[in-house]
Amino acid sequence: MSMRKALLAACSALVVGCGAAPAESPNLGKAVSPEEIASWDISIGPDGAGLPSGSGTPQQGEQVYLAKCLACHGEKGSGKPNDQLVGGQGSLGPGQAPVKTVGSFWPYATTLFDYVRRAMPLNESKSLRDDEVYAVVAYILQLNGVIGENDTIDAQTLPAVRMPNRDGFVRFSRGK
Amino acid sequence: MPKNKRPMPSEPEQAAGNGLLDRRLFLTGGAAAIGSAALPDDVPAAEALPVESWMKTPGSPFVPYGQPSRYASKVARIFASAPGTTGTGASRTPHHLLDGTITPNGLHFERHHSGIPEINPEAHRLLIHGLVKRPLVYTLDALMRYPMESRIAFIECAGNSAQLYQKEPAPLGLQSLHGLLSCAEWTGVRLAALLEDAGVDPRAQWILAEGADASGMSRSVPLAKAMGDALVAIYQNGEPVRPSNGYPMRLLLPGYEGNANVKWLRRIKLTEGPTMTKDETSKYTILQNDGKSLQFCFAQEAKSVITRPSPGLTMGAPGLYEIAGLAWSGYGKIAKVEVSADGGASWALAALQEPVLPMAVTRFRSPWRWDGGAATLQSRATDDSGYVQPSRSRLIADRGARTNYHFNGIASWGVAQGGEVKHVYA
Image (cartoon, rainbow over all chains, first blue to last red; front, side, top):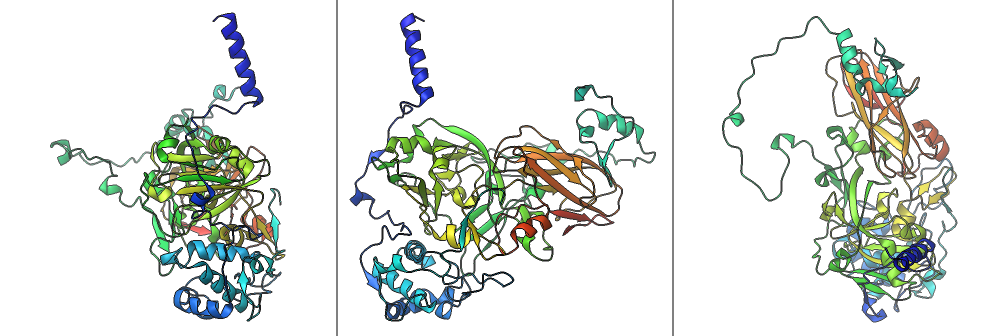
């Protein structure tokens, strides 16, 4: 190896070692625009980031629930055969039998919109229109007493909903 | 003195109570020495050896993809689905019928939230966006051009062994109790390489990983893990990842609870904070006695279990047995495993079979002379951070039993006189 090549090799080793330049990459990703991403970008942050336009009320949501949700989640979210959605508030404390529902356990109302829109109803997920999702979210929140019968849920009101168990979570650290 | 220079004892060395022998017994020729010392007088005579039909006629032709012997058909997963569904639930690995450390692909445990999607790999895309300088989308062909790395890693469902939180010991076999654990060699592209392609915005602290299944299973993961040992895995034990494990690609987060290792990976979004998805709030959190729930319990704690003997198997005649089992830690390597045959009153060091790898299962073995009487078998793992697997009662005293997640306490197998093996609490 010539002196010049040796110096070059030493320099590039140093650069890699310092992390001053990114590792070489085939760079085979293709650029995409926000419009092209839109149909996939369905996650909703706890601050409401990502919520679409549209709205719904508990009354409208009851119709959606009866048609799409009742068979798995029971009358008024009472559960069976699948998860109970309503009730259980105050059941998490020491010595009690915990009943974990949207109302008693879920810390963020935004999660309910995110999950219903992406995953429910199980056999035809992503089939509800955004207005229907807002409405059925409103219905479940109202059954849990978290919002009133005449409240409207939309991109502004949903992140403002304070869930009863909002402060019920502690970030895990090892040794606890 | 180096241990291989150690003089062999003339008698099997008792390492702990109720018949546990020195772990080196099988390793250093000790069995022969002991065998000669303990040769029974009444070795039963074998029958004349027949020449079977398969020794005389040509066997079956080639097949494109090999299958196990039809006589091994019991080496299979068991599974259950949620009411009204067919593919929403879990299947479990039959560790009582396996040995070694690598789980065959057809026996790797599964947990699906809306069945197994049949993904056309040519139509599959991996999107990286959010807090990046330029959002990018990758095809499978594009990823195949990237440098690959392999990691032998366990994946354990956070709900593995959940039945051990119950008040009474569940009358179930090892497969039901500890079958949501598997270990494979995963090969793929470092997620960090793709994130560097996109250019990470300094505000990003988390990623959201999302699957292409009908449930859009999604989890938030700290960016540090994504930039660390995370892989976009394309191969599982050398072949394309199985559909049940995320074909054509899955996220592999070594040591992390299974749910975070998102299958059918279609999207990574960089975010400032966690997205607070359904699974990381309402499901994979640990409700403690005080009513507060631990959240983001990512790494699986050190844990071990005896796979043989275990409930689901029956002992034969009294005599010399090998106790075999698995140990693993999401925090590093297994440093030691101890085995007890008297319900934890005394412990013997087990032999650890190489290789001992971080975030992979380690096979341990311990010789045991079963006298035909009652015994309670336990194993206790310690990882290289010094963490010791707790007893069931210690774990529940610390954390309560109001959750289904992250049970890593010691399991107890009761061997009854006569050889029946049952799940017990001790």
